[in-house]
Length: 275
Image (cartoon, helix red, strand yellow):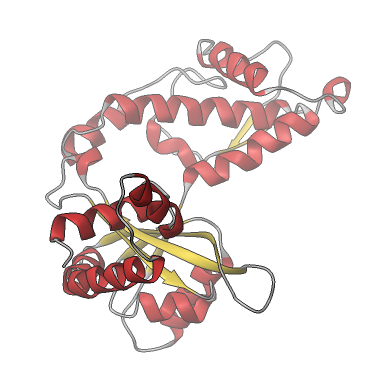
């Protein structure tokens, strides 16, 4: 009879250290222990059965919080008879209040699914009615739109700033656009501020965000200006050039150290919160 320690070792080796069961049987054979792969599979299923109540409690706790992060990634699965794997999805739902010293402990739950459709997202998040932090995937937008039209629990989307930044970085790499580079430098300064105030309370974080900070386009700005858009003249001489990540980072540091505008540059700030 297998002990709980042995069953735990097999499960951790499989899911945490990516050792398939057939490799584990080979390892056991090297120690003189003969185990069939089917036997190990039965033990893994039994461990999953015992852990399911804890797993359900974990997901229920996460979805009871006012803010939840959700994302999904491809997960290939063996599909006997098709001579190739089937692309499934591994969803992740997480909470982490540590950056702002909140009350909830960090937690993450993973959900296996055959699909990444809006219907699947609705099935998983049927009991959630808070703020959902996501990327720009359309399934989440469809979910929020359906919630808004129905009488079910309300749901608000909070999009990821890092995903929005990538678009501006792509523009800088492709065209060398000075306005896109300015926005990237502004976001770099916002990230710096957030790193310094990480772990502090909400009031301290808000006060730090209101402090004037050097801005590449005007004397000072606050960290709450993250939604501002910058419109500047397009430079034809750099329109066809490509910039590396190192060039972008160097230019951002240079811009962040210069509160004054570049000579001759006309800059218009749109939708930027005033000090």
